[in-house]
Image (tube, rainbow, N blue to C red; front, side, top):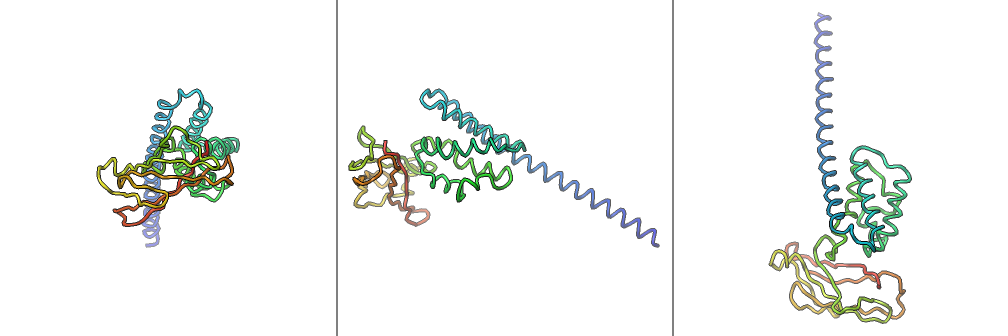
Amino acid sequence: MNVVIIGISLIGFVYLINLNKKQKERLEEKEAEVLKLWDDKIAEHQFLVNVTYRDSESMKEFFDNLNSSYNKLRQLLNQEELTEIDKKQLIDFIINDFTETAGMKKEEVFRRLKVESEDYMFVGDNLEIVKRLERLFNPNFMTKRIYFQDFDIWEKRENWNLNPGDTTVLMIRLLKNYDLNSHQMELIPSEELKVIEPYLGELTVVTHKGAKESKSREISFKIYDWVRQDTIVQKIYLNPN
């Protein structure tokens, strides 16, 4: 009787081992599929940036560094760890070149990354780090359509200054309305914002004389989202020159 019980126990034990092994293999396969999908996504970003912008002589160094950053993300997706030098290069690029070129304040970069400071950029597993940095390196940041193509903004006149004492007139177009040909979002008029159409407005920005010349300007306006039935305060940051 004891022999039979031992035999059944051994069979059950072997079965559980095989079951766990198969489950582990299936999990690894699914993880590999997810990593492959993310690798394809980063590769598409890389292709789009290189084909569209890489010939820019004035910004060649920036795009070389961005391309190198994409390679580092793909390195993570291929289960290769970043060296401390790699991490330092990424942090230096984000904090210095990226903020200046994208016209973002450092605080806005941290908000995009959903971290408190640069010390947390590389916390988590490889996929978590890639997802975090992709929110910043997605090519949408290079278009005039700030905040994931919800709107674009441009200078009404030829001069784009925002220097101390300047009055600058900006035009705003809500692209969701423009793309869908429906008033999903609507500008809310204010003392600074003249609404021409529900999706098109003229924003007058007065830069006070005591403003620091090199500091980014925070500009805000209000939008009503009819889908969410909520008012959105939209903030943007622009460089003076």
